[in-house]
Image (cartoon, rainbow, N blue to C red; front, side, top):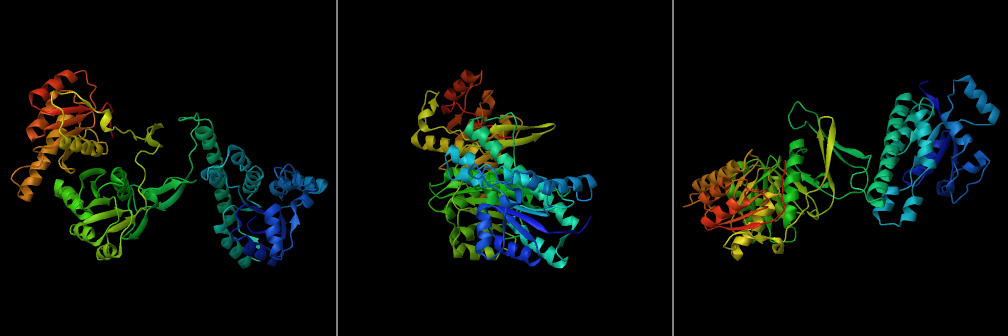
Length: 529
């Protein structure tokens, strides 16, 4: 049957948004309202006539409300196939009346967890009756409509008003699909809490994820691919997906990917000196800190001005007019900042295609979490690379220890290198990158490419020598041979920071000593693929 008349509705909601207008619309169409607890009270206080569910079932609510709708007169009324003669006889024999509409939203389990409630309170906020009614109604959507989201109330009201108090099958199908998605998200949140928070598991036997679509994107990584943005369905940390877009056309798949890389890296400098990151194809092509954001941007741009064209710029502090003017001087796809003043917004407003994203507080780079990667036939799950090495944990392995300036540049280069695709080599000087080699199949080529980029930047800028002269160099993993290190020596580096751990470490250290380098080991690798 297509059009189904709503004669009786059962309403039991924790979120009372839109409840009264919905109840009034149902009453206007002569629908009997059956309800429970606080929902019934809210409807009555608005002047609506409501029948208690205990009157329908013949049993009182009991056990602190844990048992109120788990009854054959509720679920029989929801699950009965109305054009099945055997079902109709069973309804008549047991005094079961049909329920044509269920309006339920569930106990706020995820919100209870998010506010730091006790374990007992969290358990009490696991809804049992609500999901049961939702599933029963959604299964029998041929005859029953099910509302789980207050944003859908207006559509149901329009359907009733336009169809003489009936609902069309197409609407009931859509609401059923949404209802099962709602219970899946709810159960996923509960399963995740038990696994991760209650049981302390990192890799549970069953990984339950629930995501909500944020936006459908124009296309994926390439125009022939389809794409969409999804965000966690329960409370979560903020990131690029939650940033406020002030202006510009919609973000693409690649914009999101690059912007995320830029935000993750610039967050390393949160609360510090003004810092700027420029990213292209998910790799930094320039990073610097300076006296102002404008200065930091100019220093970052100087590292690789060719790659910066059409790139993503992220800064670690409030964006003002001077920095905005500098950034807008070349074509930039996306600018990311915690906030931007009126002067900065006015500058970018003249660039209609430039996207300005405001993130609020930057995410914590040391936060815990998991990352997920799809492979053919499965997924790889790992903890976030939030490892950090302090000055005190560094081990000097050469005869010469780094100077204070060299150590600062080593740590700066190391911070950037962890965000560069492997094999990664980063040259830095005076807290600015001066050459970046990314994504090569061997470390020697990454070292050479980074040095070549530095020479090219010097030639374009008219400098007398590349800025790798006197720089520090970071490698995301150990040098398996001395050749990569010697390429850094040829580029003019005087200090090296790397994890160490190669079976040929002694030979690499000997080469560093012979070249007069200072080298420190971190003991921590930062591959990024």
